[in-house]
Length: 594
Image: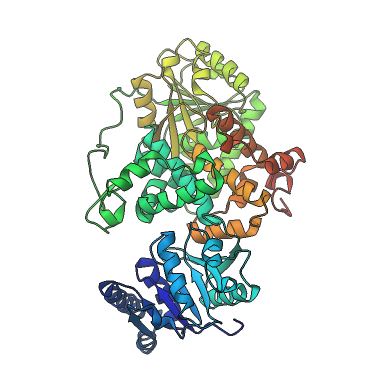
C-alpha cells in the first residue's frame, strides 16, 4: 500500500462514478470503469468525451492531452476487470447489501496490496470492512457532486483501517487537486452530517406550511449567502438519497433533528425524487433538467394577501447602533424622509455621522454619486426623542434585543405615532406579538427583520402575528420592494426562517468538535469545499458572536423544546469565559488586531 496509486477501478458509472473517472483521467491515472449495465458504461464514455471536449474548448486541456486521457479509460461489465488495480473506488447504489456484495467479490479479484474505497456518505465503512477478508485495506473516499468541480474529499477510516491505506488515498486526493479531510466513521461524516440535518429541518418547515418553498429557499440564499436554497438542493441531491442518509443518521444519533421529515417519505414513495424525476419540491421541464417550470404552488405576480398598501412617505427609525443606522441609510437612499431617534441628540447625531461615513465609502467605491449621497443625507433628521415620530407613516425599532425594552418602546410609539402608521420591530428572536400587545393597535404591528449589514443584505423577513392586518402586511411588502429588498413571509415563532435553520446547524458543528469527531479547521474546510458555503460554521460563529449565537439557540430550545436544540455545553463554556469571537479577540479561533 506504500506505492503510488496509478491504476484505478471505478465501480458504478452513474453521475458520481463518471465524474470521479473524469478527475482521475485528467490527473494521468489509468482507469477502468465497471458497471453491470452496458448502457451505463456507454453513457459514461460519451459523457467523458463531451466533458473533455468542453475542457479543450475552454483551454483547460490540449487536444493531445484529451486523446491521451480518453485512451487511458476502458469499461467493463465484469468486476474481474479490477484485478490489476491499485485502488478500487466503489460508487454503486446507496444500499448496504449491494455494496457488501461488491466488496465480497472484490476480495476474490484484487491483489492483496490493493486499497478498497467506498464512496458511501451514509453507510458504515466499519461494517463493510469487517466483512472483508482484508479489513485493513478498506476505507471511505467520499467525493462531492459534481466531482470534477468540488474540491473536498472526505477520507474515512474505521478502527480497522491501516494508516498506510489512509496515507495512500490522502496523497492521491492531493495529487488530484482535491482537499482531503480525515474523518471517522459515522453516518454523514462531517459535511453531510451537518448539511442533511439542516435540509431535513427545511423540509419539515415547508411541510408545516410555516413558509412557502420559494421563501424558504430565498431566505437561505439571500440571508446566508448560500449557493442554493435547501429545498432546491434536496431536489438536486435526490429526495430518496436524502431520506436514506437521514435514516442512517437517525439510527446512529436518535436525534429528532435527523428523523426524516414525513414529506421526504411521501415524495420518495410517490417517485417524486427531485430533478432526476422531473418533480420533487419543484417541477422541472423534464427529468434531469435544471429548469424549473410553474406548477400549482408557484406564487402569482400579485403580492401575497388581500390587503391594500398604505402610503408611506416618511419613516422613523428608533435606535443608534449599527443596524438602526444601516436601516436609516437604506430608506434615505430610496427617497424616504427619515427620522432617526436615539436616547439623546448626541447619539442621534453620531448615528447620522455613521451613515455619512458609509455613504462616503459608497461614493469612493463608485456605487453612489456624490449628488445621491448629499440627497440621502439631507433626508435624514436626527432626534433625541421618539416625539419626532409624530408624523411618520412607518416606525421601525432597532434597539437592544430585550423584550421589556422593546415593549416599553412600543407603548411609547403607540402614544406618539398617528393613527394608521405601521409599527415594526426588527427583532431576530423575540415574539413580535408581545410587542404588538404593548399597544392599543396590534393590527398595525409587524416584524421586519433586516440582516446585517442592512445596506448590503437583500433579505427582509416579514413576520406576521395572528393579529397583524392584511393592510399592514401589504404596506411593508410594498415598502420592502421600494427599497430594493427581497421580502419573505413567515409567522411569529422563534428564529423565523433563517435563524431557525441556521443556528441548529451551527450548534451541531460545535457538538462535533465537543465530541472530538473533527477539528474546527476540518469542519470549516468541509463545509466550504463540500457545501459551497461562503464561510465555515466556526468562522461564522466568531463573526456573529458566540454570546449572540448562544442567546438565539436558547430561544429556539425554549420555543420548540427539542432536546437536539439544547445549546452545546462547549458554546456555553466559551461564552462564560468571555471568549465571544472577533469582538473579544478570541472565540473558536484567536483573532489578532480585532
